[in-house]
Image (cartoon, rainbow, N blue to C red; front, side, top):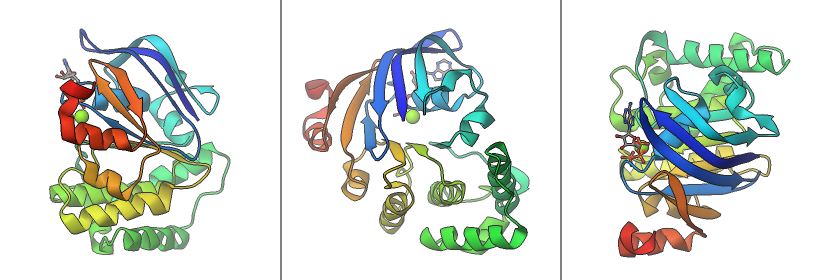
Amino acid sequence: MLQIENLHATVGETAILKGLSLTINAGEIHAIMGPNGAGKSTLAYTLGGRPGYEVTEGSATFDGQDLLALEPHERAAAGLFLGFQYPVEIPGVSNLQFLRESLNAQRKARGQEPLSGAEFIKLAKEKAALLRMDMEMLKRPVNVGFSGGEKKRNEMVQMGIIDPKLALLDETDSGLDIDALRIVGEGINAIMRKPDKAVLLITHYQRLLDLVKPDFVHVLAGGRIVRSGGAELALELEEQGYEAVA
Ligand SMILES: Nc1ncnc2c1ncn2[C@@H]1O[C@H](COP(=O)(O)OP(=O)(O)OP(=O)(O)O)[C@@H](O)[C@H]1O
Ligand SMILES: [Mg+2]
């Protein structure tokens, strides 16, 4: 589904990704761990097409298409979803408006009919219930005044409604209380653990991986993948730290 080869990317003048290669197949859940500043968010942003993240070498192919040649909205329409480490607030735009516009723009790009207001509300209610999010929260402006944990949970409601093929989730577990972590973990499984979908989880902690069991775990350090293994690699990291393992 996603094939990244020898990816190099710079932010401003600084080279951050330095030859990163990673392949993710449909049906797989991958976790990326690694020290602060290693380039994990940079990888997510570069794949998402955030302005200012410049690819200087290498390639990324998504479902056979040159991902890096697409505009961010085209990447989304192709089925890529990015859950932000720091979700942004959008004053003046309600969550429901934002999500309906996003979903229908993507449906249009895929040649599908837009959802009617009633169909959309039914879908939103279903996904909000899955994430135990009050519908009243979805009527509020996107993330404005939401607590840290509420923002993260809202990202997962968005993911449920958008129903992407590939989700890049950047520290979705950080800031969640114990109950919210379980709800989010179960939500990720319910929405994304399917044979035609894949997930890349960026995380610092084993607790999310206890819920969303990864097929592969990678260590990103110094802008590249320095080690890959199965779920047991995360436990080894937790015990020994990055210096010993990477
Ligand atoms: N606009 C920028 N200009 C210069 N350097 C930047 C810029 N944005 C990010 N960086 C640097 O890129 C490096 C990688 O940052 P990134 O956010 O990808 O790390 P990360 O692996 O996600 O870390 P964390 O675990 O703390 O979230 C950091 O050293 C950061 O300071
Ligand atoms: Mg980060």
